[in-house]
Image (cartoon, rainbow, N blue to C red):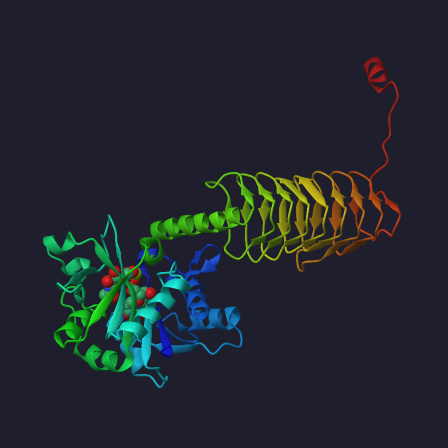
Length: 427
Ligand code: UD1
Ligand code: MG
């Protein structure tokens, strides 16, 4: 297999997003779009990665440091955003070492799979053309570059929407913006790309025509549009999220998880769930959350990042859980907020229980042992520790630790004033 350098285009302004945040950091399925692209490269075995950044360099550098610590992701800077060819040139002209083949991806095409990258590399290695371009045939090609081929099926030109004639606009095979080129061919021919008079940009897509004129063969690799959909605005972002979510839910369903309603359940791609767990409608599960087997997650449950839930738990309706570990056979069945907590096995958390984790400055932890019964409407004012085999009386505001085996009550004693109504009338 050829050694490959991946170049991810990410310097664009992303004007159509109407956002203060750089486009490629907008999230699909709980993960920045560019992370999907990087992860697909890594899974396909491509480890030499160059990101092309512009004014968003600091933003992207910070992201890469946090999301990929210890990984040597390189950056090339494109000072002015003068188009995709100009962007690739910025990387080629930098001091970065390039392997024999260059895989070019777009940071705004996040659905690309490692399988497709592997297929591209395989095809490139096997038939050794000058380049491979991923294409899809779609019903609505508007906005994409259109693929023009010769009788042999080789790509001889790509026409951008703005430059296309009426006949060319009718072409439904589109450029995905994902390519492999031989480094030496790319370096040579990218120099011939001229400024597009309409958009005043250097189009990478012009290289197809230039290479073809120089007898360099470029083959298409047809992939499903679900993988090549580009995100330029928030409508497309919404559609991509919907598509990705559907894929995630289908994968979970095939692994033995019941999802009651595909349209209202949202689960991030990194969530893992054990078999025979049931996820009820209007439930949202985020982050690297793990849920065991045989659990029932109720309707309107909101399970946030860094949550671990054991086996055979019941998380009921209107329950929010954040950054907490919950043991097995534990129920949080109704109307609760559990944040920054560690809860043991066989615990029953009564309706309306809340961990008061935030004191206005710091987040504090609530630790609850095994075999604990927490009465309804309890407030745990963290930091607080509840021992094993304890009972907490309903309506308690627990501000102090409760030792193992104890009953904790923290509420005003009830007073009944006999004949109160009768006496009031007499006054
Ligand atoms: C591009 C392709 C189009 C293809 C589509 C697929 C060109 C000229 N057109 O169009 O054929 O169908 O992608 O989604 O390449 N970028 C830079 N520097 C720049 C300009 C862009 O790094 O100067 C980056 C952007 O951040 C983005 C990617 O390149 O990640 C693509 O740019 P974008 O403006 O989205 O191109 P499209 O109009 O989508
Ligand atoms: Mg785009």
